[in-house]
Length: 152
Image (cartoon, rainbow, N blue to C red; front, top):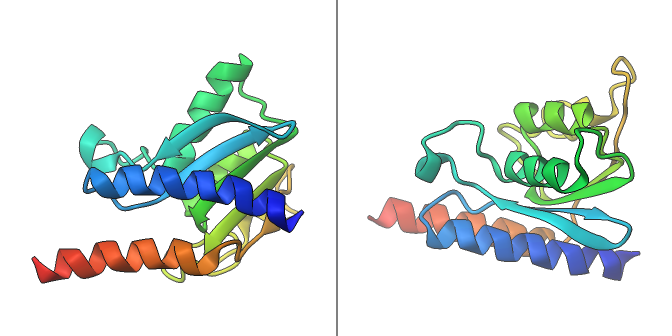
């Protein structure tokens, strides 16, 4: 299972690199169904001038289009950084089965850092959460991005 998680997290990191290259916060995501990537996304908030264009939201929208409906049951979302409240809400609404993320986000994370919205039993859907997959690599790309921003 760990090798499978790494395989898909590597793809999410490639998406994060695309964001980095566009001067976007380097977060990437992929949606997987039945062992195949059906959607990809990376942050596009600056490019699209849209606060909802987080990597997870982009990937979820693409997956819904691909599947022809909003229910992403049986899907897994791989994302380089722990989802924020907005993305956690979308994950719940989309009925995603599992979220696998790389590094924690102590300032906005809602899969265990600040809150754990994804597993709150008060919601009508709970999501399996696996954190820390390729954590160092996921953290490093963020740290490098913000270090370079501060140097400018």
